[in-house]
Amino acid sequence: MRTFAAAPSEPGKERVLVVGAGPVGLTAAHELARRGLRVRVVDAAPGPARTSRAVAVHPRTLETFDQMGIVDGVLAEGRRNAAFTMYAGGRRLVRLEADYESMPTRFPYTVVIGQTRTEGLLREAVGRLGVTVEWGVRLTGLEQDRDGVRASLEHPDGSVEEYEVPWLVGCDGGHSTVRKQLKLPLIGESSETWELADASVEMDLAPDTIYWVHTGGQALMMVPYREDGRWRLLDTAPVRRPGDPAGSGAEVSRRFSEKLSAGLGRPVHVGEPEWTSVFTFQQRMVPRMDEGRCFVAGDAAHVHSPASGQGMNTGVQEAYNLAWKLAMVDRGQAGAELLATYGQERVPVGKALLGSTRKATFLVQFKLHRFKDALAGLALPVVFTVVRNVRPLRRAIQRKVLGGMSGLRLAYPESPLTTPGEGTGLPAGSRAAAAAALHPDDPGSTELRAELRDTRWSLVWAQAGPGEASIVAASAAASYGRWLSVRTVGDGEGGPGPLADPSGQLRRSLGLEPCGWLLIRPDGYVAAGGSGLTRLGLERALAPLGLLAEVRHIRGARGSVPALPRISDASAQLTGESEPRRA
Image (cartoon, rainbow, N blue to C red; front, side, top):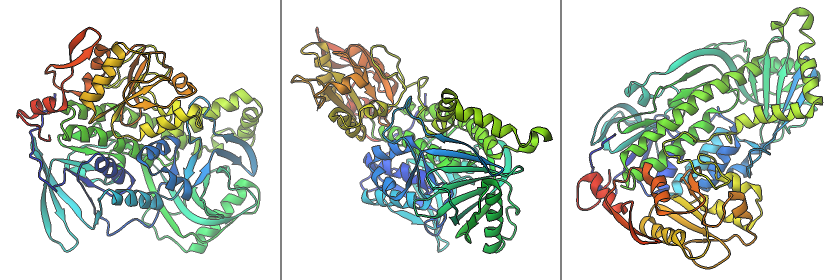
């Protein structure tokens, strides 16, 4: 089990150093600050990025932004996309519509928005929490022990600051200094070279879909921005290589125009791009995402093909996953072993991501000349004619391809924080937001969405009159209110934190019978549940938090029974002191 020495909490001193001010670092900073920790954010760049690598915000990330309170800005400034249309050799093969029927969400679409604007919205959000980015500050080295981390920071004027902090989170991209300092290897393989460009496009096709365009020997993608006529273009067979001269804007315009015209079978004019980039993408990841008091997230932990637009989305999920755990440990609300679950949950996700992006890359780069010459012009049209005309097959592919990119299938059934149970409609490890999306206009769903924005764990239980469940819920609210929100769903009076459900629709969506309960993590995943709330069941579900088991009395149906400790008791045991101090 991990052990960390206590570090005295000094008024006004930062608890976490976040290295990197991209979407991942800003998400980490926001969620740490939202939970009351002082955060310092540094970035080696002289200022905010002017160009966008990532442009897709997928449904699960939109749910996360909703929990963070920033989704409205993203929706207002992006274009909603829910289709993927494939062309080859001038012929339309198939249009796949997003199908989320089996993955309920309030956001059944991907939002196309430049990464620069996503970062701007996140900077505004962290600014409202009192956090500002220090630009031009470069991490040049770090050391750590069980007491904390000592980071060497080089400022724009050349001065070097030796900075001590309890925790460090590296979100500094594919060439991460933090990863290198921690000697975390990137394991995997290199892959192919692609070209990105942002440009205006004139053609007679609607900007209501992402286009996959095959010319016979190469493939391109087109992604529509919110601004009319502006597109993100991706070429899987660029003429130039990384480091080659960029060429004139007219050259790039002509090249994209010719390729797209051939693939779409209609005249296409691409304007001179406002930005182009040629890069060789890789498929690599770290074997673990932490070392002592230091952590990595986003491209610092894994680099891969942009074909499915997963990089930024996965990094945001990682930052959110880490932040609530780190905050609980730092505040003495959980044992240090909670931090081990960050890598235990997210490393398998990274491995699965490499596999899914390989499949997406194959789809995007699919080359007709791999078939025998006689079939080269027929294979894809024949296959997709079948897909187009056989509705069950088309729906299956829609759910597989577009649903797989959405992030909505991610669950944590095998996590150490997941306690399997029976008697609820939401399986342990699954998204609680799915229940709120089944009947989005229902008052109970609205209340549940608001509850998911709380920074604490949530215990939601269905009222059934006096009894052990009622006593346990009330006692848990009184004992653990700093980090546990207890909400009572029901028609009658009584029970802590009444949660409106006038029609009973929310109880049905959650699958809660009388006395049934769900324990929901701060990131919105179900940790446990059961058909009847009892002291022993709740204690078992909360045990993975690592609170040390000094006896605390909670009232049960038969009087006082031992349960988990109060936070102050647990924190005192963590630090070996009579008064709680931060880890």
